[in-house]
Image 1: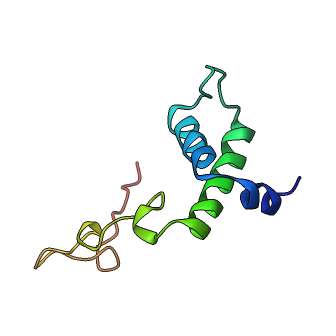
Image 2: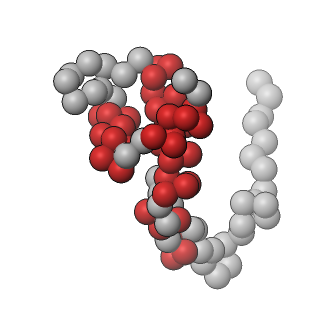
Length: 88
């Protein structure tokens, strides 16, 4: 079964269970998520959310006010002076 087919059939309840398993690192029955399951689960969940949820409800969404407004006088990341390591 390919990813598209899985996402197509995933219900909102199943997506919520998958999100919880990813957050906790284990399934609801206590089995630990293996790294390959975590990776595949995250891909599935992100794709499902992109198709079914508004942007503000998706994993990783940051409201406009939380996106790192620069205070007056502070250099941006691009303007920051690189740190040089001294050679011993």
